[in-house]
Length: 153
Image 1 (tube, rainbow, N blue to C red):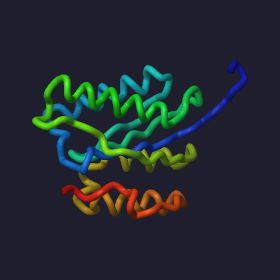
Image 2 (image 1 turned 90 degrees about the vertical axis):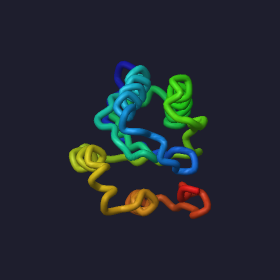
Image 3 (image 1 turned 180 degrees about the vertical axis):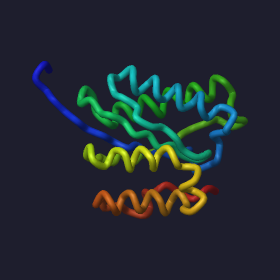
Image 4 (image 1 turned 120 degrees about the horizontal axis):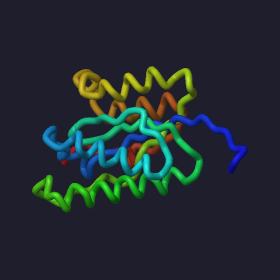
């Protein structure tokens, strides 16, 4: 579309199946690069990617050339396959069903960028489930507790 002008910023949050801490520091940066490549190949811009051993946050400059669900399916499916083909975990790696997708205006991007970049520090003070609920509440998203990411088993 030659005359379509957009400025969309979305933070994605998704967790490892059963919230297991399977993303190891030895290959975390490689995973971030791989996921970044998938997103860039779809025409979007990764502004920040970071996370913890049990989940990822990605801040994206979004181009409306595809659906959010389509990209998340591609990111989660391809990255799971990438992890499993390289045998980076002893068990079969899978992402938990679902994801969070939170939109931000341009003036909020620096704050969200810093938030994503400082995930390790942030989680010294706040648990993931509390963080995720807070994001849902701040965005005005109604939710059912039974569908929130579960505590590790």
